[in-house]
Length: 100
Image (tube, rainbow, N blue to C red; front, side, top):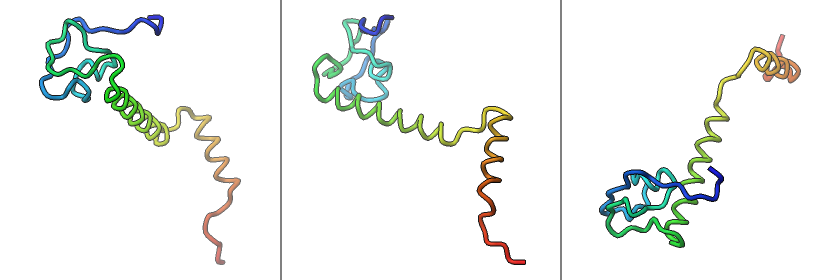
């Protein structure tokens, strides 16, 4: 795929009330426009639709937020990374004052 050719489903969706701009529309979820293969009603998943562009931007922002949260909470990938984190924690010193 060269990034310029639009993607397309082989079956198409059957949305009745969503206008094909909700995550449960298989076309919208797959980031493809509806086509002649779809049997949807009142479709808004077409080129140039402002509502579609707004929903896609919001969906992308949510997906990016989810990826960022996963990255922030991911476990160390290697023993070397754990060692580096421990070494860094050691150089910071104790977090609480020491009272002998």
